[in-house]
Image 1 (cartoon, rainbow, N blue to C red):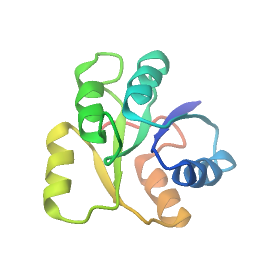
Image 2 (spheres, rainbow, N blue to C red; image 1 turned 60 degrees about the vertical axis):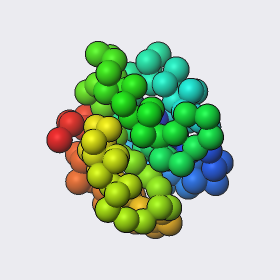
Image 3 (cartoon, one colour; image 1 turned 30 degrees about the vertical axis):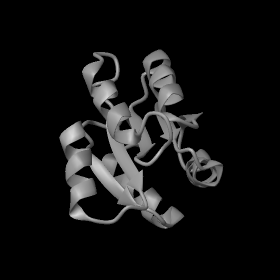
Image 4 (cartoon, one colour; image 1 turned 180 degrees about the vertical axis):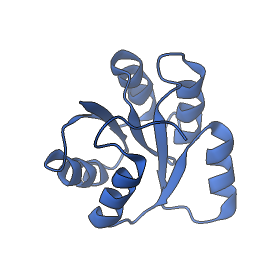
Length: 128
């Protein structure tokens, strides 16, 4: 069973992702509301796929991405950065931090499902 960590300070975004994924495939879904909690949950549970908001209080998603890439137990995870910020600079910063993909908010549940299909997350996602 693939494990997915959903990190966003907006509970509605977390709920959208959980609701979209919970009935589609066999996922172990985990949530975190901020960057510090995200690192703790990821370290403890070693998710294969992480949906990670960039703009969060305390520790932002870029720093969380760097921390996850630096830990041997989480470095393998496929990280999809989520943000409402548009522009190439945000994408470059996310890529430099180690993100695999970048998904702009707002996104539709259908776009999310397509992305998960592309990642092969119905089995075990592999880092690109």
